Length: 496
Ligand code: BES
Ligand code: ZN
Ligand code: ZN
Image (cartoon, rainbow, N blue to C red; front, side):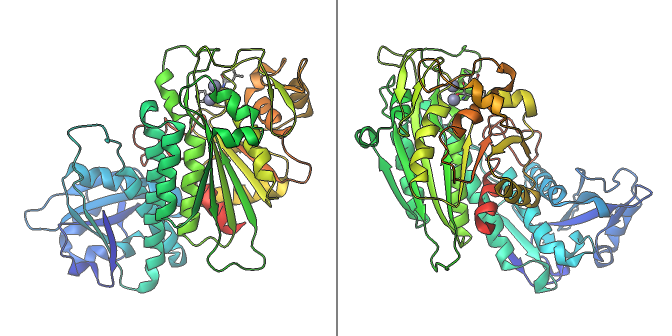
C-alpha cells in the first residue's frame, strides 16, 4: 500500500474516491467536517439525509456515475472524538473501501479537524494506523491469496501543518512492525520452531540495521539456564535465546538502557502436564510476548529511539515426550536458585526467569517482560486489556503515560507479599505453581518472576494472554494475532 500526501485542495482530486469526515451535532444530525460541502453542492444533501447521522463507527458510501465517489465517515460528537475514535474510523474506512473495490483514495484531511488544529496531525496518524492495520491478513498458506484492492492512499492538505511527512512515516512504521508481530504469532507451530524464529528475527534485524545474536542450546548450558533448557528438553526442536541490540545512531549522554524480555514458547502443549485438546492449536500464539518485543524494538529503532534497547527472547517448544521434564523435576536456574516443577504447563515463567537474570547483567535502567503467561489473566480482564505488575511506581507511571497516547489498554494488578509467599518451595527454593491463592494466578506468576529480579532493578511484567489474539472487538484487529502492546512498548522506549 502506498501512502502519500499532496499539498492541494481536495477539489483537485484525481483518485476514484474521496473520504470526507462527518461529525454529529447535538441534534444527532450529520455535519460535514470543515468546508468540504461547499466544494461540491451535491455533498450538502448528506446533511439532510436522515439515514446517516455522523455517529461514530458509521459510514455512508455515495457511489456516483461521475467520479469521484464519496465515502462519508462518521466520527461522532466533535468534543468526544478521541485518538481511538480516529483509529477505529480508519479501520472502518478500509473495510468500506475494500468492499466497494476502490483502488485509490483521496482523504480530505481538513474535514477531519475537531477544531483543535494542533491535534490534527496526531489524530490523522491514528486514523491512518487504523486504516493500514485493518488491511492485514495472514494468508501465507493459501494457494488462492486475497488480492488487496486498495493500493493507494493520498492525503490532501491545504496547509503543510495539518499532516506532516513524519506522521505518514510513523503510521507506516507502526503498520510494518505490527505486521511482523502478527505474522510471527500467526505462524503455525510446524513453521516456527525456536530455530526458525531465530532465523526470521535475524532477517528483520538486518533489514532494520540492529544487531542480533542467538545463544544455541550448548551456550545456554554454559550460562546455566536450567529453566530454558528444562522446558525445551522434551522437544526435538532445541531451545535458544535470541538477543537484539539497538544503539541510537547518535548516542546522547543521558540515554537510558532499556531491556525487553519476551516469552517465546513456539508451541505450548503443556508438556507432561498436557493441555486438553480443545483449542490447543491456539498455543501456537504462545510466543506473542516475544513477537511483540521484537516488533517494538524494530519500531522504536525505525522511529529513531534515543535510548538503547536490548531485547531478549527465550524460545522453546513445550511438548511431552520421554525426555521431557516430569512434574517434581528440580531445575537449577541461572540465578542459582532451584525450582521444583509441579506443573510443566507453567513453563513460561521458567524460561523468563533465566532471560530476566541474563538481561540484568547489563544493568538496564528499566526492564519489561511480556508474556502470554496465564489463563488467569483472561479471567480478570478478558480480551480487553493486558495486566501490568511491577516493583517500581515511576516505571509503571511512565508506561501508563505511553499507554494513554496509544490507547492500548493495560490494567495494573498487585503482587502482594502473600503471593510471593505462595511461590516458596518445599523441595526447591521456589515452586512453579502456587500453594493456595489459586484464583490470583496472574499475580502469583508475577510473584514467581519477582524472585528473579535483583534489588536495584526497576521491573515491570506484562501478561498479554488475553490480548495477544482474539481482539476482533477492535475493528483494526483482524482474525488471529493482534500485536496489542507493540505501539505502547515502542512509545515507552522513545520517551523513557
Ligand atoms: N501459555 C499458557 C497461558 C495461556 C493460557 C495463554 C490461555 C493464553 C491463553 C501458560 O503457559 C499456562 O499454561 N499457564 C497455566 C499456569 C498454571 C498451570 C499455573 C495456566 O494459566 O493455566
Ligand atoms: Zn503452559
Ligand atoms: Zn505457555
